[in-house]
Amino acid sequence: MRACASCGLTRDVTDYSSAQWAKGVGASRCSSCVANGDAVDAGQMVPTARDNDATGATWSAEALDHPFAEGTFRFVAKGTYTDGDRAGQPCVFKWFKTGGVMEDHYFAANAKVVAKAVELVRAWNAAGLLPAAVQINRRTVWPCLPDTPRARRKVLIEPYLPTYRRFNSNSGWAAAAGGWDDAMQALSHWSYHTTSGQLVLADLHGAVRAVGAVLTDPVLLSTTAGAFGVADLGPAGIQAFFERHACGRYCSAAWTRPRRRGAAALLPLAKGTTMLCR
Image 1 (cartoon, rainbow, N blue to C red):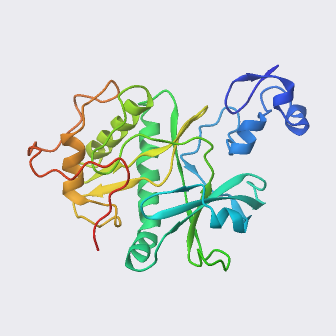
Image 2 (image 1 turned 60 degrees about the horizontal axis):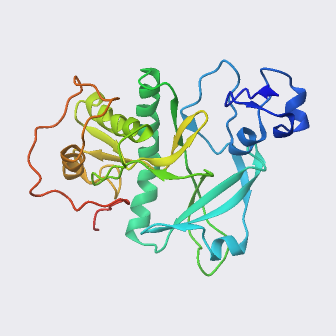
């Protein structure tokens, strides 16, 4: 038995590859952490941005023709990294069901949203407001998928998350209070406080893992609707979050909130991502 250097859990020798086991106590990482990309050296902080760290990936025509998940606007298919530090690990591709203005706006705003989200979460982690770290999958735009009837356009690629859950949305929906649900609501509230009321980091979803929570595809709500892409619902989104937000154990009474305006004109509540009409 040996403690994994990434997740800290004590595991049997069969849970390690021979190469990882040979690294010795304090350096071996279990097969689960290796497969999921938790490459964190002992004694180091978990990096906020969980990058692709890859220059190539492969996928099957069947995976593209039969995506394992889809939202209102996008398909999600699974592939495998082929080159780089993540070679052999699973990844996902995300692409819009239809092209046009929505797709152009989304990809144009993608890098801006992710960069600011990573900045905010890095500050959240540094403040030590949770006992575990929060990471963000930093997606990369790749030029195209293979020439299949279903998808011939740009895609987002990011590390695969074996489990998935939604904590809140960009219209004020929130999961049942408790544990990581409370923590992610606090992160959204704190983002408003730390940006002096300019932004709310919302639409938080991803996975809870041994090293903490990993988020994917977050949304930024700003004081100008659309400034951070088609999911930035602007002041209406910020109002919707706070009208429906009840502070939990991770929130602070000292954190600022916008002036209450009442719920009469709130956005419709949706568990999934709401986008601006273009």
